Amino acid sequence: MPQKIVQKEDPVLRRRAAEIPPDQIRSRKIKDTIHKMSAALATSHNGIGLAAPQIGAPLAIFIVSEEARAVQKKADIINDEKERRKKIWKHFVFINPRLIKSSRKKELMPEGCLSVDGIFGKVKRAKQVTVEALDENGQTFCVGASGLFAQVLQHEMDHLDGILFIDKAEGLEKLSNE
Ligand code: ZN
Image (cartoon, rainbow, N blue to C red; front, side, top):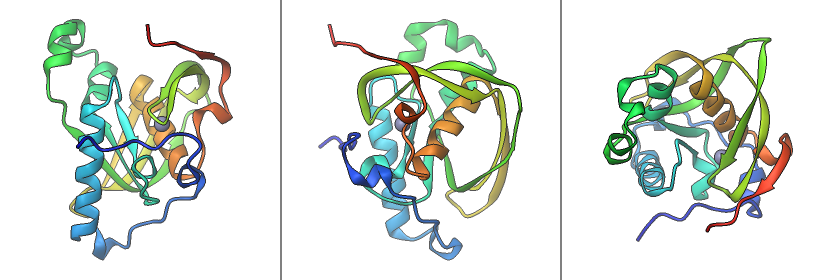
């Protein structure tokens, strides 16, 4: 059965997500949560990131498809729509993420969310961010991101603070599925 993605009315999306004690990162519960998140993201239409609250788990975990970084790096595969759809993208796992740096330069970027079905808008996002987090093995890592990748990181970090993009977006539009 496909993993359900909770929608914007669900109070779990408005809670501050709980940090995972480092000694529990490799527990069955956290592994299962990450597995469910990956399944949900893989079967979503056009999703490139997903936070744990979006599958009903109020935990400080999000995943980002490597597709977001490929777009940032303008990898060749991105130019080939068919290849892009066919490819099984790996997911980066971010646990207990912290925003280390954020550029003062911001840009207005088009945005949507798997928990806000059919609604799009533009959100001002820092052009570059640096995020530190733990991976699924409990190892600390740090990534610098720009463009789409930076935008996704900011969007997912907001989820962990109970914030949805519609709280900050301008020019919200409803797109019908036709
Ligand atoms: Zn979202």
